[in-house]
Length: 444
Ligand SMILES: NC(=O)c1ccc[n+]([C@@H]2O[C@H](COP(=O)([O-])OP(=O)(O)OC[C@H]3O[C@@H](n4cnc5c(N)ncnc54)[C@H](O)[C@@H]3O)[C@@H](O)[C@H]2O)c1
Image (cartoon, rainbow, N blue to C red):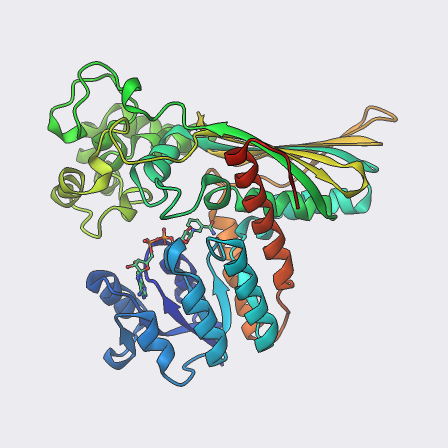
């Protein structure tokens, strides 16, 4: 019989994890949903065949019921992770919790403590650990292929349009109501760095700023909304981004195989012509992320309404954002290992780059954009390539791996990683934030 789960928050992420139940109904079934947005709630209920009495407007209503399933997926926004998670443990669920665990260190510790006390599994969605690329990188280090690791360089290259969508116009633009960039975006990277290092971080220093997305950098002729007749020559044009999906098509073209490149080239160069080709017309506009996150009405009129009325049509130089757009963070680990994390929001392609230098070799990797992993051995100069290619945007494989692993936990086939592992990467983020804000080295 399939394992069962309830879904709290049927937004972008919640629907991705719930999607595993649609692809593998023999392994997972979503039996209840809590979501205040009626359109989202009904969409989830329809897709998963959830009866009316198991559709709730709020997580508290759902979790007030006696336990309805084996697991609980908590995919609400950052500020709403702690309370539903604690209530889910109280009710006896295993919990899949979106990152970040919480917005403060004491709250993260409460979540970890509740997991320990309940004897239930806590899976924090550090999805990248579940990709072939990062598993291979970890295996290289653990096998000793590069000897003793001394230096890690890890870059989180956020594409210019992802930066604008999420951290300038969107849900994570305000570090106080969401969480600071180093937690909101980089807790994945900190988790990977700590995992690869395999030892305790001791100290951290961090520098960074919001340099670009400020009113003084608006191009001449910019209007408060892109839909106000803006005449500026600008890569952040919201209509181009959300209705036409221009930046996603460009990214897929750069990273894709020859047929994908050809198709994307055609869509970009000749959208009018593409509308005439049966079947291709529906791809001229862009129904995928990020457009799918700004409205549930994906018709041209629906997207344009969202741009005229909602936050995503605003000029990126006239938003209420305060997130840094670049930040460098240096960690000193036990045993003399140092690690640098670079986050920057001006990248041509989305992805991570990795370099680990060790006593016997160097590991080089590019995650995202179809990149790969290779090891250079010092002794004989030989290079070994690993057959792991990340997909164009890097996320989907990890999302699948994450929910599959949670399903295995519900099936009783595996155990979750200790809650303290997730807690460590969050502690690193809070310490880095404190260092940047206070201009000092912080001990962990
Ligand atoms: N693991 C990753 O790689 C990754 C990637 C992106 C986002 N995230 C995280 O996932 C979380 C969700 O992000 P998202 O993009 O899906 O956001 P979203 O806004 O699309 O979805 C959140 C949903 O929660 C619902 N909600 C609000 N109040 C609720 C309540 N009281 N009870 C039940 N549901 C409620 C909202 O209506 C919304 O539909 C965030 O914390 C984000 O940081 C993780």
